[in-house]
Length: 399
Image 1: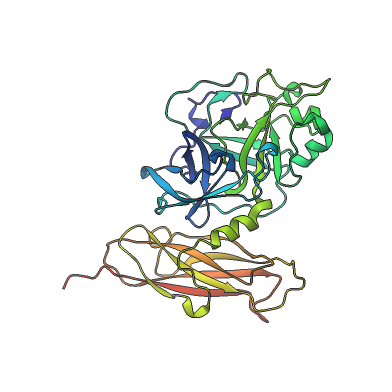
Image 2: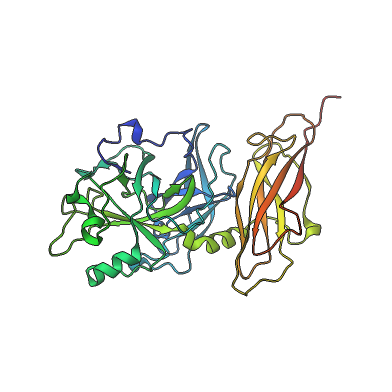
């Protein structure tokens, strides 16, 4: 990740273990590497499709957490079916892990709103370091996980509208957002000079660089964008780039795939690969063994039994876990977010990871609370639904 003023040796630019960004991972495939982010269920990493070339089905995911470094092989890679490399469209991939993700790695919900434009995002990735004045530099050390901020300036459709044939690719409007790398002066305000979207930058500004592909742009800790590419653009009268190379320097523009535009593909793809997920109420296990190590999944099944107002209506509820005698972070990993039922769905599961250990203890319980139904209701006077799961101790005790 390129910094605005200070080099990568400045720890303010580093995303160090324990800062809440340990779910940002390095993804290696075909001798190259990029970045990815561990999603809300702890089973898969979201990253960029272009990391995998043509038909690649092998990758290694490297975690860097307070518990140490750990590498996990991919068990499956799914490229978005509409991936269009020449035009930078649908540049997304899901990578499933062959073994559980480290407990210390944060799981991240996706950003499901449509108000990204104008918001400040936090960019995190393992890209080549450099500065805005000089661009990226040659770097032969272990890849560094760095962070920066930027303000989302525009949807890619607006750029195409203004630039027309001046852009050599044809991105789909509504599926990518853009930010430029500001130096604090009008001279390098790329989207200000090209589109009239004037903004001289934010504190700690940066932009993506090679190695950041697939890295997240966070809004309030949720994944709003996935890093895709950088470019330099100019017209006969405006050339905002500080130099003549595409090297992540001041005046260049970066694009992220807009995750909210792909939430149905992400959600449904994850749901299709949950192991032993229940499909009927009778299959739901309300009590399950703790296990001795790693994690297992407890499922909550949400069903819609009403009638949609229209065939294309999307239904949703908010959910959050709550402690009973079980403790979040010790006995299970807490989750919260929004579950959406898409037009072809009337039910879906919410998975919660159970933490195994060898400690002899009593059976423990935790709860899932579901609220704010959109497109349906829980019944007259009912604001919240609550379900309980019991974690059964299977460690035994001394006679």
